[in-house]
Image (tube, rainbow, N blue to C red):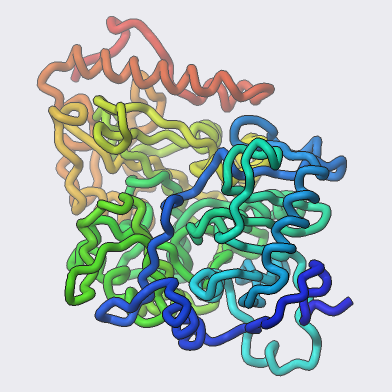
Length: 534
């Protein structure tokens, strides 16, 4: 079977552009009207109707080989092989006489667990995205006479619009993963993040069977090769806090943890750029240059990006290769992590700025994946809302969250890893009353956790959340460490803390057959009289 001419997917294109350089891809994109250059040479595209992921349009073909392993439901939507086959034929027919762009590369820096992938794209700009976000073949691999054999193929055709219910799906857009045929179909949407996240979902399904823990996290490494990983949902500071001038970045979003350590899945970064600050986020700002793909960023009349302009979407993005950042671990690998940090932006203002978690508490909070949505971030939200996303990345986790939590527990046990919960949200009151915790304090707490300065600290258990609060932390006023201290109305603190605790408990009820030790590690909803006001 030949993988060079795309006959293996029944595509007989008039012209196949095979593994073009980023310069060639940018030229093609401009000539075809896909985008324009910014003043620093980034390719700027408008993705049209779809400016973010379309979760209700992501399907998995229901097959006997995977049926019992997938956590089917509102997140992982099933689709029949019959519907897939019809859409596949229509999409291939649409592409049959078009020029297409091919990228051959890998997902995963660790060769033992990497996945070879071929991305076939209708648009040059999407081929550029694949070129920057996936891992490229090394020069010696390209020189070999062997034909590149993909384990998975992505076929992306933004111009092909489905007919919604008539085609057996929900809209004109679709993302369909077929594990038996090892193909991902993406149609009707130009948002390039679907390419990245569909393959992240694939890795999240394939790796646990190999004993590898797939993670939606960032990772960095210190001078002594000590590795720290950061989990956190959007807005919690994951990218900002992992970008440390004293530590090298392994990766900012997707990693695997195997017996030999951690490895980055990707070869690039897909950073949010809304309100990007040149001083506070220098690495990202300076990475946006020629070769970078900017999505939905507004330019002024001098073609200078206005990162504060969210008129097209708040989800403006920059896709660039890791080598655009100076302080990186070039091989994308690290030792077994000594520190795991869960980040949450608690807008209720009741969680401690930093707390230590037992293994069971770590598994509980990992399965919960808590943060807050703020007023104004989504239509209809007028006050903070608790948000729970299992494993800090539920949309991409195809298996039951307990599968990933068990892998986390095993790693913590085996490598004696310390786990901390850090609240980057509000203190002294909830959103609108209190204030966002000082970033310098958060950085000091992260540094203390990573450098082991908290190992000998004195710890006190929080009476509601049952997590351990340190009495002191270098660089942080001691009164800040206990969240109740900064509330003027201690009774109101207790009311809000119990309210959040109840939300944790209500959310956790959806998990079935969880070991009692993990379920009991969650918050305790108790009477107000049981809480001591100190």
